[in-house]
Image (tube, rainbow, N blue to C red; front, side, top):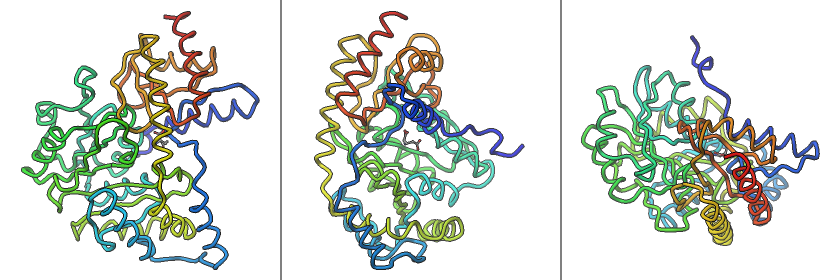
Length: 376
Ligand code: GLU
């Protein structure tokens, strides 16, 4: 059987497309599906892309990304996140998604195992399957705040474990791993020479506590760091993400993959991303915090059960009965689009993205309340 026969299309994108179709038909849908900031990309960033086009920067570039962008990312990571990679250790990809796929492809061989913690983002399992490796899902517990324990991790490690995948802040829960958990994961990986792929795309969007990077905890030759501008700078459609690693062999492999799969990413988008490195996004974070506080207040009022999201822009709450049915009925009866937890390997829950306006959050949550009162 071919790997594509066993993977499903991206559920988040599929349900978002359905919600958008209903909206285009004039239906009053509240779209809580896709994790996409509703802010426009900041004007100074857009202007740099226009300028690049006007200057004729419309040709191929270095497939790793233009040196100026890799320099800007290197500086931005150091100054803003205390993460130190030189421009030569960075490869720019088509969004975090391609960066992750290159990271997996650069280390995995057939039947290697990748440990990942559910609830998890929809594309991890399909990406690992496409590389012919094997996803091994560690089910975390609601009672533990969806954070894996040392025992849970160790009981899934085998001699085939090649990678541990970590995503903090987490999609779909909004949870942040504390230093103890990250240290445990790092020690397990360091002792056994297991690679760690760290998807930190939500690291800027933190409202409570502090994001801690795996940079500095995992041995440098074992860490593949992944980040992107999509969520932090409202740049989802630009497709600018990147990998960074100090492992020279792995870096070389990622460069080769990038050069053969897509050459460079869109050239004007690279110039825009340089500007993103120097653009203050704190106003977006403040607004997301307001929205999070509002959604939590409403969720508490009508007794939803959830682990409080400290970052990202998702609320992942418990439902009684089948989560897919819940989402289908909520959409057909109340025109509120959400994503079932099954899409994230955690049935019995539903994800709301609060990357939308206060008015829509108020109206969507009001409808969910009505739905729950009548149904459950
Ligand atoms: N990462 C976002 C989400 O989970 C965007 C959609 C996607 O690529 O899955 O909604």
